[in-house]
Length: 388
Image 1 (cartoon, rainbow, N blue to C red):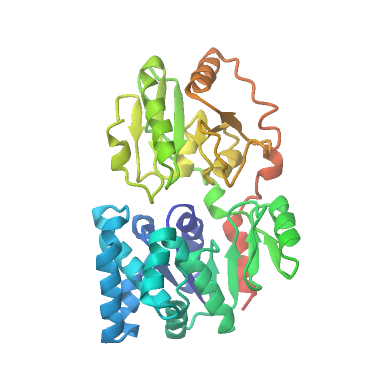
Image 2: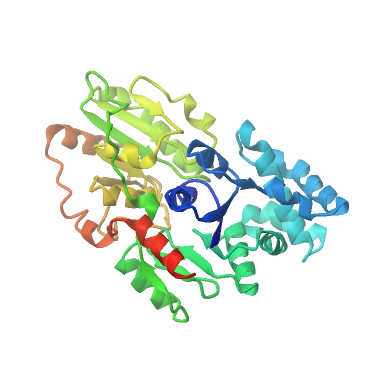
């Protein structure tokens, strides 16, 4: 059995890392394809991985010239850290080349300039990779871009596909007929409602949402006078979101007994937030989200799936909705989060928390419905092994 994991960064790669570690322990074969920024998290966890560049040997000289042309032309327009530049450039160039096999160059570039990475669906690359690696199965954690293309190509090659749905599946349409893994019974119900052709939907939980407590769990963010730790998780592509974070950073001095810890999304440019750093406002990158949540008194986000990590740890969840956004996950309507609509409401919440009079019993009444079963990795491994 050999499992192939193409994976993006953030919660996607964090979901597969514990699965891959268990496959390592069981001495099963696997390959991980690191897409864009996921190489950081894989390296930190000592997981061997491949890059897009490793498959350029499957292309001839003229094809590589066009890939390089696209890469050089469009890399500078993308947000990236210097260390990511080569990987992201290769990713962009490969995807645009792949599109050029089905469309003329003018249309490819026009669509990319107007819609960005939403246009990416590298079916040719996926077919080449799968033909080269010949995996027993493909495991994906989202239905977008490269991971979607790998799923489609795998089914066309009669390779079993496993799809981990990281959210509740309220409006999720699944391509093909993979074995679908979901976090709880509510998600299973939603997936089956929207995809009546599916025959295999299993409740396993999502490893990214499951907190595995460490023996040494000393709080790294404690300050001598601070009694409360507030964690804040952001989302990429939200210019207004940066304004919200700046407004929060501007009032932290009013709350000397609080420490605010901001964790930007891996696809964001952390430099956008560095100017906000102060004694009580920290910005961190290489720190596990579940660990940060475990040390927090409250969790704030816009619509990140990190909310489910907070829910599984029974931590109060607050939604930063200063601009009345149409978020893809509405924790508030699910009975699992409290909307914060402006900086005054933010202040009020902190004061109530400090006074010990913050009552959230009605706002987070449905936590028990959204939490997932324990031992998600074991459940997923058993399904993978049982397939072969």
